[in-house]
Image 1 (tube, rainbow, N blue to C red):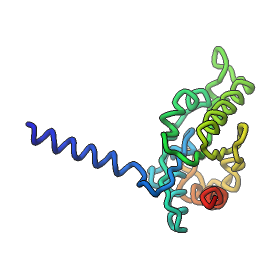
Image 2: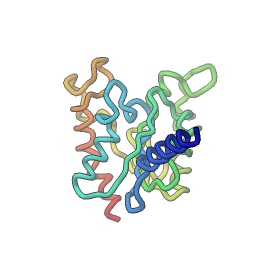
Image 3: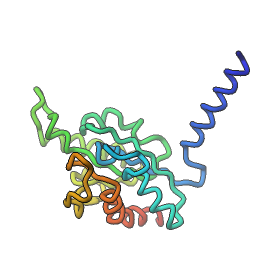
Image 4: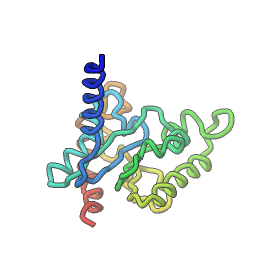
Length: 189
């Protein structure tokens, strides 16, 4: 029994270590809603994985973790911010806010744009306070570097998943091609 326990403990420790960046890697946390999570595509085809590949293929020693959750709201991300952007993160890339309009941010599930923006500002303030460079799609908070609208240049249905709302791998490729050079500039500092 002890032998079996040690074997499982070793496997668990190995898996945990493999998911963490090496000492020399820069940790990038990509978080937010389904645009980051990669709804309807394999996680290896979602924005964070493709961003990591783009950066690594150009010589950047980075680890991009995907902590996106489909359906997340600004309030949800604010509540889980410490786990979504783990200790050691140098850069955070966030796409959040669209679900606020669908699920609401105020009382009785009404969309409150002021509360939604206040949540984004608090997210930005907390990350800035931790010394993290912040890139945000669409809504931006204080000190965030804007990446534009997530769907800029990918409105055509050939870049969309079967539901017509989310992106397919080709759509994510275009978003990465548009945003990765901006993020790379932070890695050169």
